[in-house]
Image (cartoon, rainbow, N blue to C red):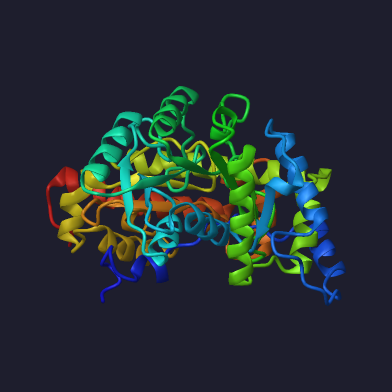
Length: 418
């Protein structure tokens, strides 16, 4: 089966990973990992008490108080979402997701044999479905004999790098509650806001505490992507108690434990000591600058992209450049992915990886690859007061801009590329 087939194995086997920060490992994190490397014992399923206490502290500082028996840890967010999907929809329920959505959400449901129904997002942001479209999708699925039970969403979104406004989130959460849906809120990117003093981020768990499970992959802002660890915060009440126990059962069956050295580093990071917070803030500032510069170049060439507000990426629609792309043999998202990956020299996953139509010319561009090719260059980016002026970053942005400018110029001339 071709990997471009959206209903085949492609999205499971070839889904792009989270956009990494591209920076060397924080020395203090490496020291905690190394200090625990000699321990032979395995972490208990769901996490040891020290890790769970650290996770509780992390969420309490964000206005989401919890206790250890409502928290679980796993080796990455996909493992936790797989367990949650199995618990909430695995016996015949259907899953709803926004369009576009994170690349790893769909495979979790499909591995369980559960259908995934996309719901359009509004023009101003991604990650959270339009409330009226959500109600219509639920109605249609039920009319066709389905049983929608679970809505997965993200306020700070991958792939669109946007943050849903509180008023939209309120309306969508109210619509989901009225239809009896359970919610999983992926908050992996909540600590990567580009303008934290100007952007209001609310968690659905603040609005619907008895129906929302929060999942956070620590690769978003606290750990390197190669150290898989994630934490989940479960709803209050008896339903949350049942769900927590059921997820632990599933994680046990999967053998899904966090490696002991990684758990030690994760606990240290979740406590948010000064070295961790300083690195996170510096990394967010760096990627915000690079994302804004990349966005400006993409938009200047005629593509459509929402201004990035969080994360280490942006999401562009090259529909306005369809004619010059067609002249280069690019007619769908897979061909666009291949075209831009080759010319930019960095991964450029197409929108079909994120649940958009194969025919739509959408692409996610990450900022990490623009920071240089060595630890020395990337560290220089982190410490420089003007990272965009560094030669290796400047060259990368020029390359990005020139690839898109060529398409714009061809569109303006109405000529085929030579």
